[in-house]
Structures are given as C-alpha cells and as structure tokens.
Image (tube, rainbow, N blue to C red; front, top):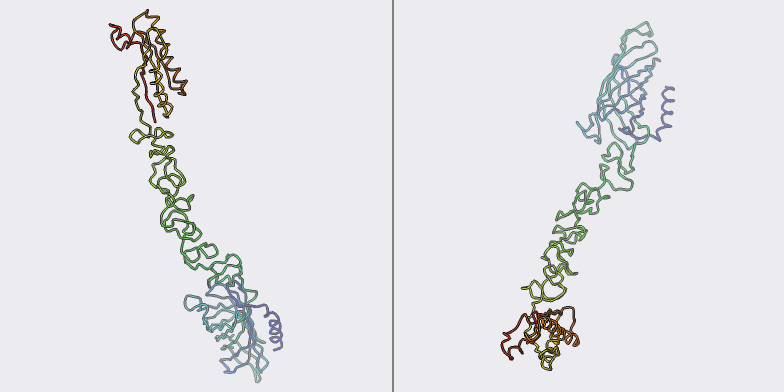
Length: 437
C-alpha cells in the first residue's frame, strides 16, 4: 500500500502541466483506484492502477499498465500489462467530441504475486468522460486471467488460478501542451489551416474567414462582401475586362486599364464616355473632346482635308476653288513700252484683286506687231511685259506668283494687214490669271 501511495503523490506533482492526450500531445499518464474481485474466491479488494499511454491514431492508444492489489492474507498481486485501447469515438463510429466516449481494451501482461508469476492477458470495455481540456475520466471493466498453480495457506497448499474481474476509475492527464502552431485558438489536431498568419480571424476549423465564399480569405480580399476572383484579390469584374468593378469607371462595358476600364471604340485616345465624336475615323488627330481637328474651320476634318490650313469646300477635298480673272489686254503705242492711263487704270483694278486674295497665279505675256525686225520686236515685247509686272509690284502685289513671257510678233491677236489691226497686236495680256479668295 505504501508503494502505491508514493506513486500517487509523485504523479500528482506533475499534473499541473498536463493536458488531455491527443494527436498533438501523444503521451498521457493515468492513475486511480479500482476494485479487484477474485472470481475463484468471490472476494474483492482495493487495487491501485497506474499507466502510461501513447496516442497512435484517432482509433488506437497503446498503454503500459501496472495494477497492484493487496489482500488480507498478506498476498500482494502486481500485474504489468501492455494493452491496446480501441476508441469507438474515432469519427467513424461515434464523434470524436462525444460527451461519453466508449472503447474496448485488451492485451498481454506479466502477473506477479508473493508465490507465483507468469504471462497472462486481459480484455474488457469502458468509457471516457472528458472533464476539461487537461483531464479525462476513464472507467474500465476487464477480465484478467490468472496463473494456475498452488499456494501455501493455513492448513496446507491449495490450488489457485487467480482469474479476476477488475473495475478501475482512472483520471488521465495529457503530458505537455496541445499545439496551436499559428496561434489562432484552434489546436493543430483540428486546424485545417495550421499556417494562418498571426492576427487573422478564423472559423471553427482554423481557416481564415471568407465571408463571401469566393475562395479568397477576408484578410487577402479587397472586396470581402462580394464574391470575386483570386486574380483580382477577391473582387468582382462584371464586364470581364480584367479590371475590378471597384476600380472600373465603366463596370458594365469592357474597356482598357489606361482609361480605368472604359472603352475607346474609335481608338482616338479619348474614352467613349468622354468622347463627343465616338466614330472618328481611325488615325485622325482629335481635340480634347475626341472630335477630329479642322484647323481651317472649313468643315472638312484635317485627316481628310488636302488643304488643312486653307478653307475650301468638301467637294474640292477641303481646298479652295480657283477663280479665273477676266482681264482686258493692255495696249501700247508703236515702238513704245510705256503704260497709258487706261492701261494703268486696268492694272489698278487687278492689283486690288490680287492683294485681297489668299493666293494667285499670274503670267504676263508681251507682244508686238510686225513693224521692225523679229529680233527687235522680241526685245520690245519683253519690255512691255516687264512694264506691266513692275507696275503691279509698285502697287503692293507680291512677286512670288507673278511671271512674264515675251513672244515678239509671233503671236498676233489679228493679222497685221492694216494699221488698225497692228494697233491690236501691240499689247500685253495675261496667259494665267487665277486667284483664291
């Protein structure tokens, strides 16, 4: 009895650090009293039970069990058993967290008393009642085989077999602490997500919360209340353009990232929702409103205007129409290259028209009658053409588009058959006279 009392006190010193046995805390120790009934004698006595248990799986524990009992005749029975405990609350038959958890137990051992010893076996059943995180109560009933033999007794030797029934009531303590590697409050044995980052809220399985059920945990989900895709950090994308709705200014129409999810149908660099001219031909330069440029304001856009800096009708591709001027010939006296007053008056009108125009083309040709040599007349015709050009320049006409030709007597207006006809051939006239307003 003293031996059992000593063991009990020793074990009591370590139970303060003990927790229930499980997959994370595989070792446990149990101790407690029991009742030992000798089936042959139909007598009962008190026993002490001490065991060390090793968790193997949700279904099995391995136990090294030592049971000691004392009898009034002075006989001390000591039985050391290697038992296998089969737990019915293994998640297959009953729930692991059942309030009462039944099991079967059995194994082989070595029985020793004051006079006999030998190998024996036991088998039985019991139930476990979890008391708290640190302790559990085990109540077990087992049949224990004895050893056939003889024993000294008052009056002589007697035959015995020591078969017995034993009932024990054991308090078991797990050794060590149940692990919670990620510190989320769910022990590793039940934690389906044992690597959850610190501080992340978890569910009963130890996995990060996912309120919208999209597979992206809340701590990584930029839209925790709307189901989305992992590629967009848990946010939805209704139009499927790869831009999360929360960042998409046009969430119902596929668009471009550079325009915050809005389209640019005509590809002019102005998104449709800001484009006042969404059908601009591709490649045309546009203004801030997305409308094609029309630099000269003639209604023909620059990319279709062959004269983008000069107004002109669409019928002429945006270029102005040329106006042909009707200018009378300027006549000279015989053998002269001096302008008459009438000639100057006509040239004054022409100068006003040219100065008022945007652009013009003017070529003056000089001519003579047939009086004199051909060589002389060629030089005279040049002087007459230059007289007209110089006068126009003197009136402010730009000489960039003014030219002259001289033909002498080679291009008469009429035959040189009379004096009056020869007057008509002494002239300067305009081969090209066009202006653009």
